[in-house]
Length: 526
Image 1 (cartoon, helix red, strand yellow):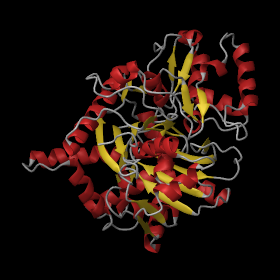
Image 2 (cartoon, rainbow, N blue to C red; image 1 turned 180 degrees about the vertical axis):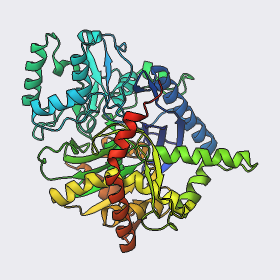
Image 3 (cartoon, rainbow, N blue to C red; image 1 turned 135 degrees about the vertical axis):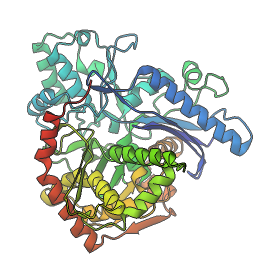
């Protein structure tokens, strides 16, 4: 098989590392995956460096095995490739790229003072999960390692460096580290100047611009797979160096790409372990604490509603149901359990039948919570059926997302010509899609590649770098050369579902003080 025109995307998600190899027509040829979970150590959500290395290699090995099983030859190369990962967080290194602190993921909500101070200093919303908030909080805390920082990057940027030796980021991922200028598509010079003044006042000698990765838009080449990187990725030595890599991106950018949602006035919702909605605008918005301003992979401004938790609590309940099934002597796979339970949820009462779930495992900026405690509540006279139980949990997974979207659509008046959904929440046909349509009271589309998600989007960004013609924009490439004949399923909102979701949301928001009290009264076990 001629592999010179294939493209490979790898994405490190919250619960799975996935890889997808696509052909010249952007069709998946093979895939691989590796499951992992973050751990909370001394109050910090993290993945160990060993877990990162092991996970990437195991995922790639699974891809190689799938390719060999399908085509009876080893996977030795690709035409282009790229790496993406969950955005934000804190990965700090010394001059030799040795870690100075544990990886602090986007899930952490321990940077409140820094985020508040930086938002005031820079004149824009700086969320707690952004890399600059983590750095500034470490400075405020007086952490000893801060004086020795030489490199600051994201998870995608770190893996990209392992593969290429280059310290670079795609503009979309970089926009979750520090604010980006719409004019230069690089870090905002005026805001950098303001931060440098504060840094000097605090006595640190390094300069932030020197710590941050270089920024590149989609379509540019960001290095090649070096011999050391190829050996890291595939210790067997079969996979060869020399492959060009596109700029590493965040999972938000790959989600937009995978759903053809990079053109102005389009939007997408990615729902899995966490959830976020991305609405591409024609101008930056006024600062809102609940809204991030980031960019598409080609640098267009994007209003982002980010929720730390989406399906994590549902995942825990499904594991419990599978455990009970095994106890009764009937083995049920998690995939089958999810599918059946999500379908059953559509038979529940539109408002969840008097049941209420708080799905928060961590804090949520939109609802002002610094931490979370999963909580299930019901009225004594509720029917308490399994259908209502699942529907309540699925609406809970979308509740915080809806609060943020309402702010954008109702207060800012953002126009959405097309809203596309993807991620694990939408794998069961119609179920998650129908409830999201009820939440936003607008049509929601799902592409046939909805389940592929981020790694497929990364493979498409690699293809854009490999095949784009002079002057061809990313939106045009996706619309005309990738998705022109894609199968799309669109669901219109049902009036009863819309009313039921609003009734559920009213209970949810009224009970937020109870969730906050749970955090205070029920401390986490260390």
